[in-house]
Amino acid sequence: MIRVLRDFIAVRKQNSETKSAGGLHLVHLDEEKTVTGEVVAVGSGHLMENGSEPLEVAVGDRVVFSKSLAVEVKDGEDAYLVLRESNVLAVLG
Image 1 (cartoon, rainbow, N blue to C red):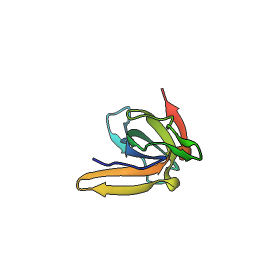
Image 2: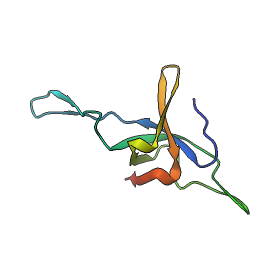
Image 3: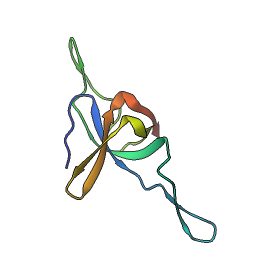
C-alpha cells in the first residue's frame, strides 16, 4: 500500500473501458485529458503557519483530475497516480 505526505493524494485509475450496443469492449485511447479514479490514500493535510488543515477528499471518493498533473507510481503489481489535492477538479457523487 502507498502512504502519501502532506497535501498529496494517491488515486487508483478507474477502468475507462465501455461496452458498445453489440457487446464489444471499447477502450478509450490514452488521449484523454482528464482521468477518473478512486482515492486510496490521503496525506495529513495542507501545511499552514498555524498548523495543518485537513484535506477535503477522503479515501473512497471518486475524483476527476487532469492527467498531466499526476505522477504514476508503481509498487509491485499496484499502480497509483499521485497528485496534490488542489489539482482535483471534482468529486463525483
